[in-house]
Image (cartoon, rainbow, N blue to C red; front, side, top):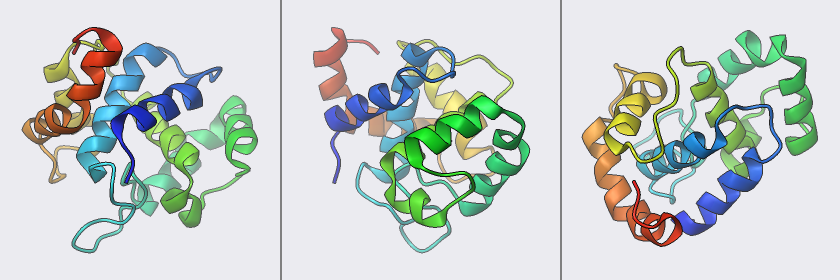
Length: 165
């Protein structure tokens, strides 16, 4: 099981020096997403299902990211090759490679047409998560995101950021 402190450090380290914009906005959103999706615990979808890794990304979503987004961005292709040693989707990496999971989750959010919510806007983060990551047809809810944040992330986040979000 991961903890929020380790996961926050991992996300910050993975995003450092990448072409993704607004890492200060992405970090809390990704942290809340991973807490919500896997409780920092599960690499396989609970109850059986296709989602893999701590970010709980489905192989179909992984394929779509590569086919319709990464394939058209040479800087992203280089990023995945350099940081993960990958030039194509990998179900094994999806489940076991923490860096790959963070990068792919960030791609999912980067593809969204709306700007990232502010770091201190927990309601905005939870609604953004539902709309762009879990999708309107997914089982996750904004309320669940906020509950998992309070349970798993807030104790660390208060220490790290002086109480926000």
